[in-house]
Image (tube, rainbow, N blue to C red):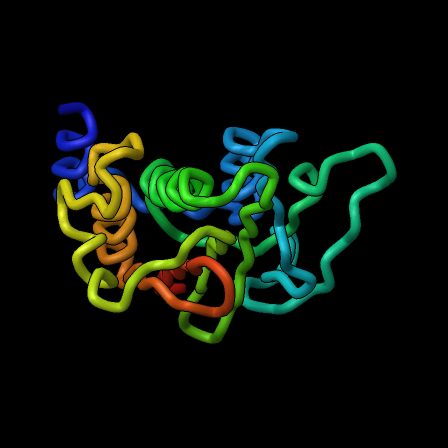
Length: 187
């Protein structure tokens, strides 16, 4: 019931849009989902600009210092959004990827900025998504495997958040597993 209420709140889009550091948002998602048994990794080497620089200027990725986690050093540009909603959408995509990944296989998050769009990709190494299910998986309460836990609302929530930000969520077969790509319009 709470996830259905959350979906209704997102669709109403009542929360104010604010500017946030994308890297901090992604770092929180990684921190909440990463474990030694099921790692979540930041894959990018080219990111959006750091907060001090003007938006949409690419800067190189900094590798973490020895003994520090990659998630603590994510640097990315600023994004105007409803941060709690975007974080929830990304969290849903990562949790879904973890659910379908074999034990020990990393889930990867990558970001690809363009002039108008920001694409955040979440890639797993699971069984992938059958072509006839690629749209159905975004429907409320739809699940591909009744034996796995889940309400069938996570992907619907992620897509609703992306669409409320002028973007979308799609699934792609970029290799083994599935890649869910959330696009957000950069204002």
